[in-house]
Length: 339
Image 1 (tube, rainbow, N blue to C red):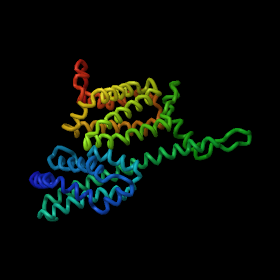
Image 2: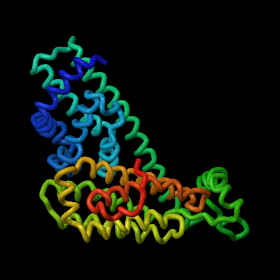
Image 3: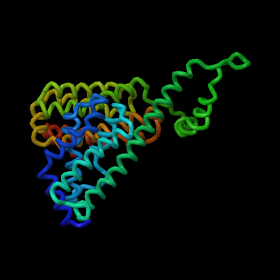
Image 4: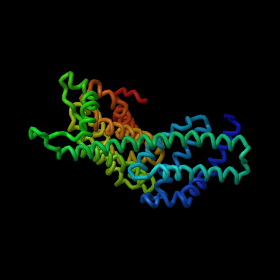
């Protein structure tokens, strides 16, 4: 891509940043989709829209890679939990693309210009990533829902000729060829299969769904009470994880530390959020994405598998890094390697 054209495009987007977000938010189709899912347009544009646009500008400055925006992953999980269909996600993303194209044309950048071609190329890469990831998210959710429904149905099994309960055929097809092989490594070693209870998984998903909105209120409204709400989420999650001791003890401990630090150092946390909210939010987004993956995975896969404790080490480090940002003395005697 031509760096000269990218700079022209980046300069325009930076100068028109506020107006682009405002026009994107106020688009008729975007307003209609958000209203149908009871999503506040200002919350969407401040928490997700602004960061997506900033990432786009970062791509133009060669600081970010196209199609790999971390905020988009969090946004898509948020959309999934609010029940948006793929076409509705597409309409919201198209709202951004159409808004930026409108600004390009308004400022004399025509279809034949290099800057216009670069903008379209980056959008196409991002669109491809968005569609692929949203399909994957919903596939995983459908699979989880199917497993839950199967568990409910398994309580009422038909009786065979010998008077014993017989599994429904569809459950046999899933349980016997797939799950028994899936957990074979654990059972061969005599280890117990331990998976997240569905109630625990649902609770944790709900907890981490709330965090982006709470942090946005901390920033937008300077509402310190929301810091305690975030602290309580990590405290409750820590308690849930300890039910599965010893497999998640280190992750549970780090969440407990974060909860305590947020309650004891709310002023310091608020100061960091005001001055460096983007770095802090990226860490929280990373932890939320990790937890979503763990919940999906360990709702069906045994926690007792060999080396499972290594999977969540990066999340533990992210949590400790969050603490170090507003309580720097917390780890002054401990050497922590951050990614």
